[in-house]
Image (cartoon, rainbow, N blue to C red; front, side, top):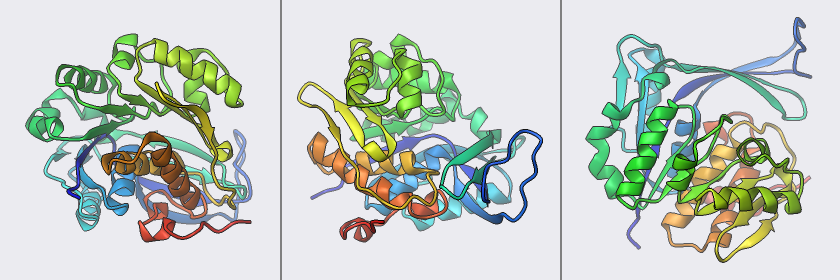
Length: 307
């Protein structure tokens, strides 16, 4: 089967991760943490997750003309990602994320977007044909909102399938929502966009219904250990995830989205694609790091380790 193209538009960061017993309170210093430095950024995480699962990926992003940016591009090329549309900013540094992870795997993240904040309409122009020839376009909200809104307009005008992972959470216009083939918020993002607090399948159904009424084609609300709630014309159910030992939840959502778009690009039906994405995300939370935790195809063809 010929692979269908996936275009990911979004951020690239370097993640500086510090793991310790607990997350520090304001004004508190916590000693004894383990430090690692890994490639990250929501766009990059999703692109790498898709590529590691054998997706045919084009990545559109901005990095600084610095060591972090050059290392990032080399990393993408190593994963077989098409990097023609990654451009370097001469003034802004590459994005950096400071991530603290506690012993339960929960995290606290602060991001300096740097060159990511300069990703604009002009950087999408050279990639127009790649966008038009894609089976799916996947993006997030670590790029400027105006760029994401332009992408929505472009997708609507060209009848393209745009998937938005609305993270980090922020309000979105009904115009943007109506341009989406699919929206993949977590519980917090779904609450911000719908006004409904998502805690279980019933409240997820209510929130997803509101979002579909705003024009979104398909809504998938990721709900951590509960799984993912899916609402489309044909489906309205919570697809459960596997029970695993959580080490680090960083990039679990990104892995879910990357895996989801690969499964869809291979022609899997929606429920099967979500099951595949759940399996990939479950694998990712068992490993420390962002892109380093993304599974290969082989990794999730065998059962995930259980507690």
